[in-house]
Length: 383
Image: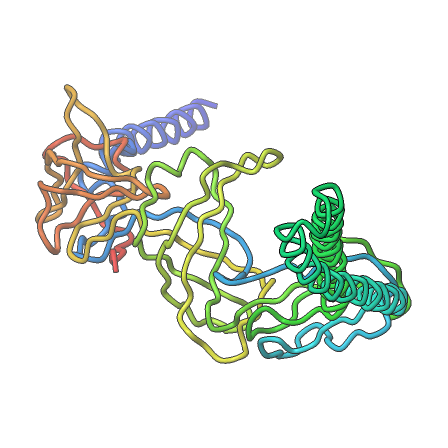
């Protein structure tokens, strides 16, 4: 029994000695901060490069024209001919729509007959006046010779005066009916609606046989040589937009191509419903790919610089009222004060404090202080 007891005690002492040795020789597991201190805090950096920077306003609108018109009749009636369709090229004075003028032609014939009657009456009075003038002259001679009395002479003079008044009234009446004829001729001419300039037909809202009224829009016409983009812009941006500013235009019909236009004018008041202003932008002369009514996306360039540094806003933090970034040099970060300019879409323009090729920490700066060792896990170029 004693032998067994001493054997168990001996085994226990061996196990105890082994565990004690293991405890004294194995190093404790290091903490995360200790590991980071040794290997460096993992960070993501941006390689700063000088690049173009622009502040812009994103807008949408449609293609229009500097010269466009709604085609509408000046006179109502039944449409008997429509000679234009959407997308058709037309020339100035080309007939687009014809309105029935048959009733006007009847009125014209009646007025022409009236003119003939009034003219005949005026001509007859003129002949009578000529005869009366001769009679008065002859009677004046006879009165001087005491052949006729003064009363008889006055009778001839009164007749002449009456004829002259009738002639004057006839002339006025003739003038009125001539003006009526001119009015009818104008109305007949207005029944033929012509293109006011060379262009392309947009929308058409009329068909043969329809009754139309004065001022009713029948179709639209655009001068395709003077196309523009008509953009809807919120009033908050209007003070920043000036005539002559560049605008980058994208039109689906042109694929991925971007064309450059310029602001030509701004509407004087917003649309009462949308509260949006219309900004008109010139478009360069192109082929027939661009058509009025097409949807347009644009970027109105407020400012543009060709050689500046841009970093994401997340890379910047404030300290004592100063704008600070971390720059990595030889695997160690250093606080650097910067001066910032404009911001757009989360990107900040840096006016001073950075140099070409600087490594700016953009992710992981929360665990940093000046002099901290870092490990770069991702490097992004700013270009």
